[in-house]
Picture 1 (spheres, rainbow, N blue to C red):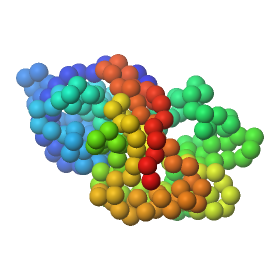
Picture 2 (spheres, one colour; picture 1 turned 90 degrees about the vertical axis):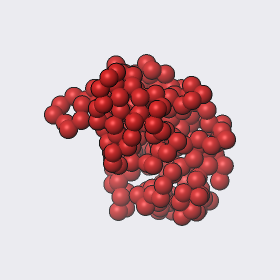
Picture 3 (cartoon, rainbow, N blue to C red; picture 1 turned 135 degrees about the horizontal axis):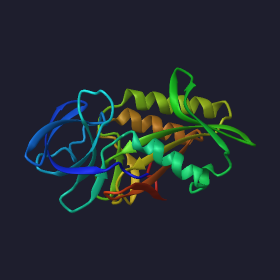
Length: 228
């Protein structure tokens, strides 16, 4: 997935859940933060950031897209991106676990929630929920970085589908290149970890991929081990 033209700047402060203040040249401007996570490891005053101009009549004129860490690692801060990355990689035939599916539908109902995708193929259907990961500690990608009732409901719905004989997947997309493995972040939300482990024990497939991130594009690269 190619980024729109990116404008460099410096992170200043978080204003609220979905807004940040950044400096672009000599101007201090407000930008939309397309991510509801805590992002303490990314939203650090003085860190380099890159924003994209937003189109349409919106309150802020920019989206925060990429954050640069002190070691030079680039991280995508946009939680909307993983679904697009999955769709693009699937369309290119780059995701072997999903190779038998020939069509997909987005934002489909499953029980009392909506999940990201329903996949269709000669063998039937499957359900998939995609989660965005930005936190990495000691080479391990961690999700969530804050309690997520919504995430628990998604995984529970997938477990219900699997109990009815329908294949189900959770895909964690680590939006940075420096993760060597993935595991649930129990200190942030132990209940999510418990539900994810129970789902895996009942046959829900838990997958994780990392990304290559540049100032031109972001793309899924390779699977990484899942530690449950």
